[in-house]
Structures are given as C-alpha cells and as structure tokens.
Image (cartoon, rainbow, N blue to C red; front, side):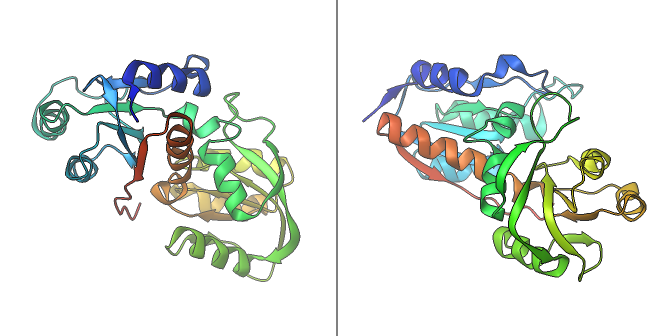
Length: 253
C-alpha cells in the first residue's frame, strides 16, 4: 500500500498539533521528495548515516525528531548541510520533522513513552513547566533505591547513565523530561519528586541536585528520545498500511 505524502503530513499535523508550540525549528515537511510513501524510515536525528541507511532500504520518506534549519544557525547550504540535503533531494526522499510536538504528545510522545518504559504509573504533567506540556511526574508501583533505578535505566537505554545521588536512598516519585531538559530539576524538586531524570546535565546540575536534595540521572539525550518517533512510525504503518523501519544511529550523548 501507499499513502500520499500530503495526506501523511496532514495526519501528522492534526495528530501532533505543531501550531501550539514556539519551537526552535520548523515542524512538518522540511524536504519534499516523491509524492507517495510506501516505505517510511524513522530515527532520532537526520544525520548523514541515517539518510544513507534509509537510501539503502529504498525509503520514500524519513521521519525524525531532530531535523534541520534550527534557529540562529547559518542559512548557507554548504559542507555537511549540502551533502545531507543533496542525498535527500538526489534520491527523492522526503524529510518530516517534529521536535517539541513529538516530545509532548500525550499518547505517542517521547516523554509519555519513556515514562511507560520506566514503569511509572499515573503520569501527569509536571506543574510549573514551560507550558508546552513536556515534563512529567508520576509514581513507581513500589519504592526502589537509587542504585536499582540506575540499573533499570541502564537496561532500558543500553548505556550507563550519569547518576548524582545516594544509591541506598529510596525513590518512589519520579519526574522526567527527555533530551536536554536539565533546567527542570528545580521544578521537579519543588513538586516533591525523589528523582529527576533527563538526557543531559550541565556543570551546575550536580550542585543543584545535592543542594535541593533530589536524586538526578542523565540517561542520554539520544537514548531518551528514541521512543516517540518509533511510536509515531508504528502508528502510521498501522493506519495507512505502509512499511516502517526504525533506524538507530549510535550516539553516546
């Protein structure tokens, strides 16, 4: 089966509602390829390695969380950007990108999917976040210690997370936001979370965690944002009867 590119984009826009967000990049169709989609590749970032694997699979379109044309970046199409765009255009492959809308979706988003995989129940939005509905908070079915939570995240992401805390201290209430969202740590502490989990850390994050009395895990920007795009790809494959393949390009950050 095949779906018109325009119909797929319309469905994604209706589902993810990008107009609600003041984002750092344009959401939706960033590069237009062939008019119909039979094979959809998904991934976290539209890197050259991802594009090359999608070309090898004969993908018609690529859907990612991190695309191009970020705010304040150079508009010049040279070097790396020229090679990436040249590969997409030369192979008639479309690039669809959803950044904050993919983080925030209440069923398919990065944050809700990551929370489910961590085993958090009764998820809700973290009060006091930016208003975009990104950060979340919830409870584990039963309290576990910090060391056990670190191990759970390591098994989930396939990498050793950065941990600031006491291994024997119990964790029941967890707040989280995938990607580079270390700035929510004070909001998480104010909401009564025992632990805050995100993708990255800044130099001051360790000091804040210790002084606020909240445990902290940075589990990897890429590692925490692999799940929403897979959920959306699976949703599109089921709805439109197209082929879907998630392509994971290793990234230690």
